[in-house]
Amino acid sequence: MSNDETTPGPRASRRAAKPRKRRRGLKITLGVLLVLLLATGGTLYWLYSQLDGNIKGVDINKALGEDRPEKLPTSGQNLLVLGSDSRAGAENKELGGGGSVGGARSDTAMVVHIPEGRSKAVAVSIPRDTLVTRPECVKDDGSTLAGKERVMFNSVYAQVGPACVVKTVEKMSGVRVDHYLEINFAGFKDLVDAIGGVTVDVPQDIDDKASGLSLTAGPQKLNGTESLAYVRTRHGIGDGSDLGRIGLQQQFLMALLSEVKSQDLLGSPTNSYKIAKSATQSLTTDSGLASLTSLAEFARSMNGVDPASMETIMLPVAYDKIDPNRVIASEPQSGQLWKAIREDTTIPEEAKKSPATGG
Image (cartoon, rainbow, N blue to C red; front, side):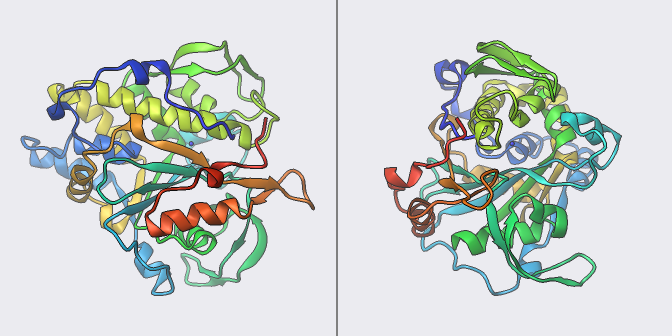
């Protein structure tokens, strides 16, 4: 779920605001937004229990202990949102050009910061090819993996799992991660199909032979398979690096959230259930959000955030001098960006500029 700082497509920007009663749901992440729709009154207990049991939880606090950054000095919140390219299971393996690739990686990573007041948000994308220092982490089997410098960011998930990804992000940024959400490939596809597709404004013609994606520039309505290829394409845009597709990922996320927001899902229980089922079956969260009740409560606190007002930024990076196929966090920009998030203050314009653009 690289580097254009895109804005939502025309459909999203032209859409008139809906009455507040239709604006329930989280406007930040895919899973929380949709799950809320089924957590409202009138849902049968057995239906609630089925959906509630679909959500997988990870006890981040237990895994990381006390050696973590301080919480924000305000009521702001930080979420780490991952799109996982797990090849587990036949459906996941067939998606996104999976082929014979095994294991799983964090294909898309965003730190979503919701400032105090919760009326706006900013999403910071971390390029998967960024070289980072992985801290010492504990594996699921209880063994310890020693820290290591200059590892690719997306390899951390594959080697140690989500708790270590959270720890890596906290160490590199000094930002406390309050919540964690992850959705896998198959879930992403099913989610888009469940809402009837998403319209995006394709910025240029795309012909990616690796994924089979072929699109002409302009507004295009994409189904689940096409959407997955769109947010993963790297050969069809820019210089072929991960940076070239981050702008597409950010643009698509805004269009997806706006599409869900525009539909009268509360007036269609059958469609709501279909969407919520596909979302919860593919959703992993921190243990604090691993229930419909917790997700609904958190979603209600986010009610004032509008997708159209969300700012999308790529972590400022520069090409690595040793390996030009990799990037490293660029200073002083990245330091200024993380500092603003840590202190819940306005992000300076110079902190949004990346020397490596992927163009």
